[in-house]
Image 1 (cartoon, rainbow, N blue to C red):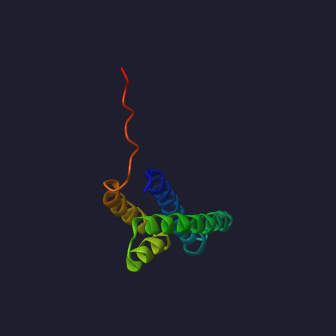
Image 2: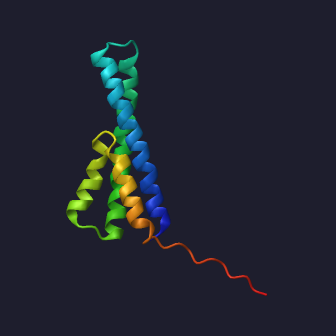
Image 3: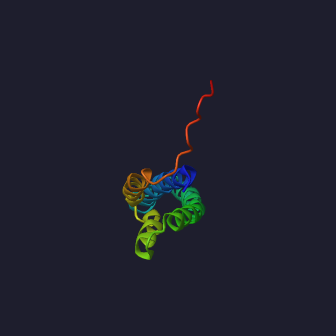
Amino acid sequence: MKKSVLTRYRVLAYVTGVLLVLLCLSMIAKYGMDVDGAADFTRVVAIAHGWLYVVYLVFAFDLGSKAKWPVGKQLWVLLAGTIPTAAFFVERKISRELDAKVADPAPAVAKV
C-alpha cells in the first residue's frame, strides 16, 4: 500500500472532523442562541461537510480495501465522519496501525 493512500485519508479525516465540529457549533448558535448570521454559516458548513464526507467515504473505503480490513472495522471508519470528534480519534488509531505497513519508496543509492 502506498503512503499517499494513508495521507489522503488522514487529510480528509481531519477536514471532515473539523467541519463536523463547526457544524455542531453553528447549529447550537442557530437554534440554541439565535445568533444573527448563524443560519447562513450553518448552511455553508453543512453543504461543505456533506460533499467532503462523500470524498472521505471514497478515500476511507479505498484505504480499508487496500489494508484488507474486516467489514466491521471498515464500517466504523466510514461512520467516524458522522460523529463529532470521532474522526480525530479513529484517524489517529488507524494511522498508528498502518504506519508500519505503509510501503515507503526505497532510498536512492548513490553510485560512486
